[in-house]
Length: 189
Ligand code: SF4
Image (cartoon, rainbow, N blue to C red; front, top):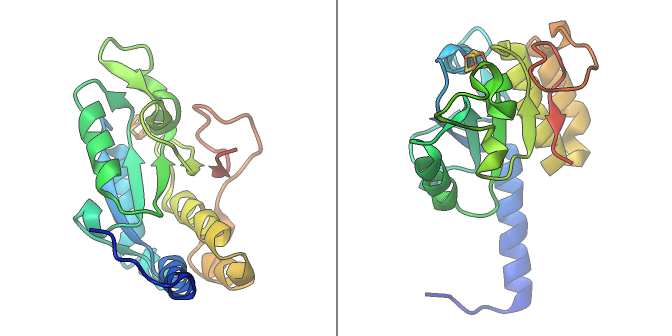
């Protein structure tokens, strides 16, 4: 059922929704075929040593309550439909972060008979975090890139929080991204 409302009310509601999304995005995590290496790094990112919640971010279980899908691993033929279904269950506006070389290109599993390739073979991806597995600092940096995209006027504050979270110690080199374990997170063109 669609509720009709005056345009100015719609605009106000959209502003509130975008403000809350940018200040406290909720993540849902899906492993579409990972070896679990990237998943362990995501867990490390959320636990007190790195504490992603300091950026206002929360991991929770249902795609219906999530804003951001964090996906690890290549996409196997068996998980393709589940990945698409989870993505479709996330309400708009929604975003996708692909974590790890496998989620970008298939990585170590590329060319296997049961592998379709990276996540963007199935759903659109907003930010790619290279690495095998990416360090927690790189994952935090990828999330921060997404937050800055959503809220450009908060970029300086997010950068400060990122440094506090250890992002400044991230090993980076600007190379063509594919299976490169040390490239910087980057935003989809
Ligand atoms: S990128 Fe590396 S750690 Fe992550 S799923 Fe692929 S092989 Fe495993």
